[in-house]
Length: 560
Image 1 (spheres, rainbow, N blue to C red):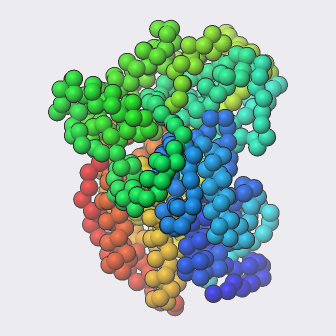
Image 2: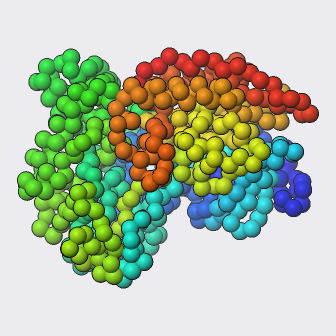
């Protein structure tokens, strides 16, 4: 198929426009262009491919999923030719991998970098999406595909006086490309989530003095990163097929064996031994590979939480500092569990201070540093590790308007409304890769992306084969999916905690669990059944005809 200029006021028309050139956008471009033969344009605000890994290049930035899982599976040749150097790949290696993918499949020729989508409006008269970008260009496409990811819209600092600070301010989510030397400086880090936990030990190695400002202590467990020996790498390459299958079906997307049953059904001695084994294994073994009930039973969860608290007290020499680092008031795993390397030992260093801003928050940023109560902490530079407006934030910032002038912000004013986390009612031909109410946040991201892109590609092929001009979920199907997702979440401890899973980290954001918490196999069954039954739960519109309604299947029975 070929593109055309269409209505000249809207510039070039493509069959599909993709927003984002990270893991999701690259595979979507490859699948739609090279498999379906569509004309495709990709827009990305970054200067190159990489998505999250283009921006988050701060010292210590590293993936918390094993590298052999955190990679594409769609090409056996790609799997065999790329060799990972570490168990958990660092930012620069992941970025090199994505650049290699872009080159290997000749993807850059259809990507326009340094370009942000500022508005996307569905034109009911033409069944097209009219897309505007920050360079003033206007583009039209039948299909609009969001590949912006769940953690790409950064949480902006809301501290008073930020503009007064006389020194440089950096954000872990938008780190400069050039190397920065912090030697001899007084450095302040605000935030102790995953990014903060990674950068703080790195800053302690350089700074003359490091001050960490912590609002909420985190349950951080060991990463246990090691170099990958060639022999182990060869074994992994030889068994990719066996490794990938459990990733698609298991909770968390990682094939850790959950053979230990319920925590409370074991003796205290057995629990201690299993927790110790998982702690020593590292990665997400403690969260996913210990007991099946720690995310659903508060008493069981407390056994895991108390184990971690005891480990923190063992590793931090000053009892007062240790107690500040011990998490309380929320259940383990209800925030994404951070993984760490020498994080707690950092606070044993004489030149590192920990300030609790949970009890007494930051009053303002001054010209010289940070004011808390009557104390001003003098700094030469500061680093914000504040996290993201997750899941919905990247979508709501694109200015998307669907049928009859309804904006996505209006449609989602009480929280996201989707069917399968893939589409939303009143927004025809808008597809979301790893959207809210899908299991993406509890999955291995590249595998979740491939699942969604394959479903979207098959759907578009079906539309083309049946001469349908548009597809969208029925209101009934969407309402049932939202209710199903909420019901699953309520069986867990997730809704009880303020986290980015629930949107509670963003002031004014609706507080609702945005994550599908059922099993991967249950979710895959729901997606497959909808497609296999002719896209039940969707409206398919034929040219010059009323929408063809299809009924919603009952969501697959599932447990968290």
